[in-house]
Length: 246
Length: 307
Image 1: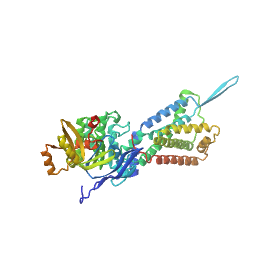
Image 2: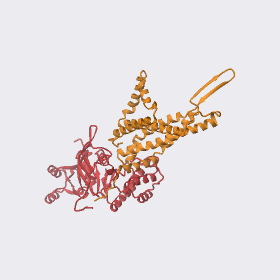
Image 3: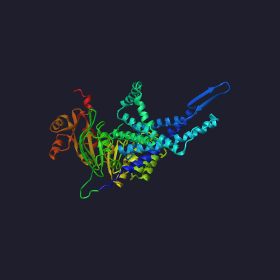
Image 4: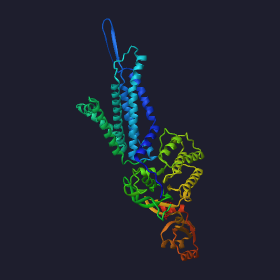
C-alpha cells in the first residue's frame, strides 16, 4: 500500500495563513502608503471657522484623524477585491489547497490585516496631533481627550468597520470573478441606485444608520460581525465551484 | 508494491466528459492507472490532455462521468491535493517571494519534499535561490517548476508538457532526474507530451487520446509491436490494404506505396507478402501515435493530392 499524507483542514488553513502573511506583504506596504497619505491630507484641517470684531479677529482650524480611518476602510475594500483576483487565487493551487481552505485562509488574512490597519489608523491620530502641534499650528490645543476604555472602544469599532468593508470587497470581488460583465454591472447598479434614490434618500440613510446610529456598542459590534460573517459566507458559496483555468 | 497481486488504483475515470460551452473537450473517457507507474498521456494539440490532467488535479470539475483519485473525487479535495502535485506552465507563485522562499513554502505544504535534492538540482541547473519566478525565462521557469515537481515526491505527480521552453540538454537531464528519483522513490507519474520520442524510453504505459476520446491504453512495449509497415509495388500493396484497416498510407512515387496496418499478420501471410516483394518494417511508437491521431489516413499529403 502506498503511504498517503493526511491533510486536515485546520492545518492547511494555518499553513496557508502563514504563507500569505509572508507572501502578501505588499498589502502592508500599501497600508502604510495609504495612511501616510491620509495623514498628509489631514494636516490641512477638516474645517475652519473664524470671526472678526473691531479689535480682534480669530480663526479656528479643526483637525481630525477621520480621513485616515475612511481611507483605511477603502484600503480594506480594495485589498479584499485584490485577493479574489485570478493571480492570487491561482497561487494557492500551486500548493495544497481546496476552495474552502483557500477562502478561509484569505478571510483570516483579511481579519489580521484589518486589525493591524485599525490599530495603526487609531494610533495615527496621535501622530497627527504631534505633527499639528509641532509644525502646522503651534498654538493648537487638544480638545478631545478620551479615556482608555473609550479609546479602546473606538479602536475596536474602527477595526470592525474596516472588516465590514473588506468583507463587502471580498464578496464584490468574487462576483466579478464569476462573470466579467459584473465588473461593469455592479458599479452601474450601485450608481443607478444612488441616482434613483436621490428623491428617496431613506435606503442609503437606513443602511448607514443601521451601523452608524447604534448607541449600544455591543449591538453595533454584533451587527457588524454578523453582517461580515454573512458577506464572507456568501463569498464562500459563490466561489465554491470556481474552476482554475487560464 | 503489489501485495497478493492486488494493485491499488491511483486514478479511475469512468465515462468522464467535460463540456466547454458547446464543445466537448473530453468525451466519455474511461481508464484506470495503477500505483507506481510512469504513464505518458499522448495526444495532438487540442486533444484534451490539459483538460484531463486539470480534472484529475481538481482544478476543473467534470461535466459528467466519474473521476476518482486515491478513491476520492479530486475536486475540492484536500487529501488529493496534499498527495498530488500538478506541474504545468501556468504554475503561479507570489511575485514577492524568491525561489528559495517558494521552495521553503512548498516544503511546509508537501511533507515529503526533499529540500536537499531541490537545492542540488537548482545548483545543477544554474538557478539562484534569490531569483524571482517572474523574472525567469520560459525555459528556466519550466526547469524550476519541474524541480518542485520532482523534489516534492508526491504519491501522484502530474506533469503537463513539463519541458516546454527547455533546451535539448535540460530536457534530457530532466527526464533522467525524473527517472532516477522515481526509481529511488517509486510513485505514480502521469506525464503529458506531444513529443513521444522524447519520453518513450522512460514510459511504462501509454494513454493515447484523440479529439477528447481515449484511443488506446497499453504498455509501451506492446505499442511498439502494435503495427507493421508494408512497402512495395502499389498494385500488391492495394490488395493488402483492401483486406484490413489501414492506419496510414502514403505514395512513395514510381508506382510504389507504403501502408501501416495492425500487426496481426500470420506467419503464412508474412511469407506470402515477402514472396510478393513487399518489405515489412516495424513502426516506431512515435510515428504510430502520429498516424493514429491523424484526421485522415493519408496525413498532410491528402491536402496536397488533387487526384
